[in-house]
Image (cartoon, rainbow, N blue to C red; front, top):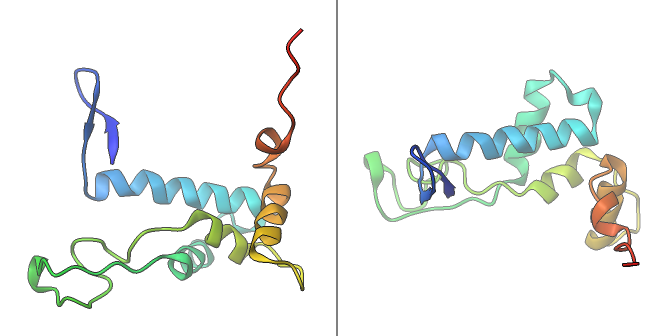
Length: 122
């Protein structure tokens, strides 16, 4: 993950120190979409884990098998913020995945800037 580094500039880092801010940001996004989830650690964890794309490795870090999830390289895998938001918002029957995504953006207000037209220069 590209991140700022001590002394200025940017560098590539990995590990839990880089993953934790992403997971915390996703938890905040889920609470934004569903304020009733605030403080419900179990529900937040369940939504995040249910939306993860499992990743495996043949590195064998710490004795992991090639098909084990979680593992010591990728943990449970890569989080999918859109999928997590879709899981916690109440889907509307008959909507496609794209329709659900737009509904989720509308519910949390995340898409206001992205969906509004650009201002016309004067």
